[in-house]
Structures are given as structure tokens and as C-alpha cells.
Image (cartoon, rainbow, N blue to C red):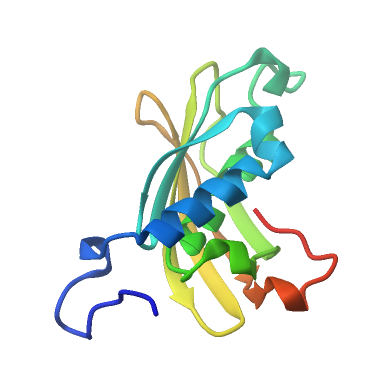
Length: 163
């Protein structure tokens, strides 16, 4: 059972992650080759919230010398996914493929590390929505978006991939 407090007792941020949730998130991150390839690091996770880091690399640049938008989208998707995993009883028992996202690019990402902060906005039985903001180390807001995920037990998701 999830350690969610009764309504009106505490806010989501006051909950603590269980050891099962922590181990599950670690296992999901370690098993994801995209995170390893790109070097995405999970910096902080609280129930319903996650912050991830992408260290700047020039091979993430497009022909204009700015970070390619798809790279920004990947780091945003990871932040949203981890924020969702943080409220599941055991993240290893769920697949959460991204089924839709909208990302507004506010300004180009230059030669700084990227921070993406995800926050769970809604979680139903089969669908969840997370809001994500991406900034650079200087605090410049670079992108904001909404990510929608399917939430399914892994035994029902043969062939479905997740963060």
C-alpha cells in the first residue's frame, strides 16, 4: 500500500518515498539505455516531483550551435516519467510509455547543462499527466510542457517500453 496521507492532512511534498519506490526508480533508471547514452542523471525525487540533469555536450547541438529540440524533449520526458514513478507503489511493476506530449520552447538552449523539473499533475488508473519545466544552470527558463503517460502493470504490457 502506498503511504499516501489522508486528504487534508499533508501535501504531496510532505510524503516520503518508500524504500521500494527508491529501489524501483533506481532500477528503472539503470535499465534505460537512453539515459546512459545521454548521461541523464536523477538529482532529486520527492513524491510527485523529480529533477534531472543533462550535462552539456557539443554533440547535442544542431547546425545552429544550439541544443537540438529533441534532446530537450528527451530530458523533459525523463523528468516527467520519474515524477510519475515516484508515486507508484513499486515502479518496477509498471510500464509508463509516453502517449503524448506538448513542449513549448521558450528560448534556445546554449552551452550549459540542462535541468528538467517534472511534477505530477494528474494520475488516474490508466493515464497520468506531468508538467515539466526545463532550464539551464543560470536559471533561464528554456521550455515548458505537458507529458501524458499510459500507466499499466508490466505483465499487461508485453512490448511496451517505459522510462
